[in-house]
Length: 272
Image 1 (cartoon, helix red, strand yellow):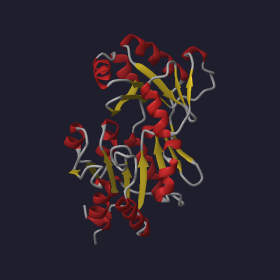
Image 2 (tube, helix red, strand yellow):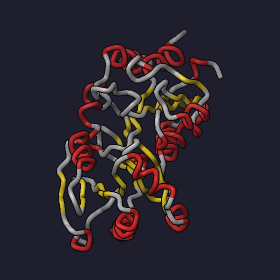
Image 3 (cartoon, one colour):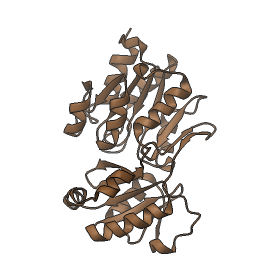
Image 4 (cartoon, helix red, strand yellow):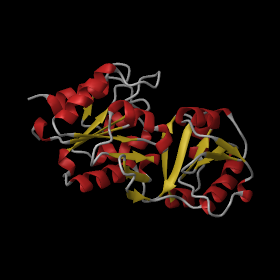
């Protein structure tokens, strides 16, 4: 496809848009600004909750009409300006309860994200990391005591990478059949509604904007980016991406420390 035909780029955040200091480089900011000037769109597609994304939306000034954000790995897609929701598929409290029982059997830590906070039966360094990255509070409490009206968006096993490797290998078939399961980082294993992934989220945004998938670029580095990379007209893996992502991508860009996202925007969306 002719490079100038790409009109939307969906970009993962951690390990992709953000460098290791969790910052957006000046080159990336400039590329996004030029993209906007040409009437093209960038959408952040992340496993983070909205609170963990807001300051980056502000840095990139992504609050125009028809600006959207994909959060919780596609479980919630909404307008950044009006907060109008175009896709929403949370889990149930029952999901957290049954996955909690499984986490005890597999001897891994667990937490769940609501639209306001992170819930955990036992505080641990990985839940602290989730809280710090996304600037959301931790509520420690027994899973069976959670109010029935609580909206659980996603559940995560969080632990040492070796422990999660072992847990992943031992997941029963009923879990694989019931949930979308994503490895978003070496220490994060995520469970979402079966109908949810970033590809579904990007598709919802493209449909809202009246775009074909051939007009969409998706960029990511980890297991939770695989579906959107497969969906895209141009699927791009970061130089620092997991091998499974690189093997599925149409193009491999530079790493997140080398402005890989800016390179893709410049090369495929700004060149005349």
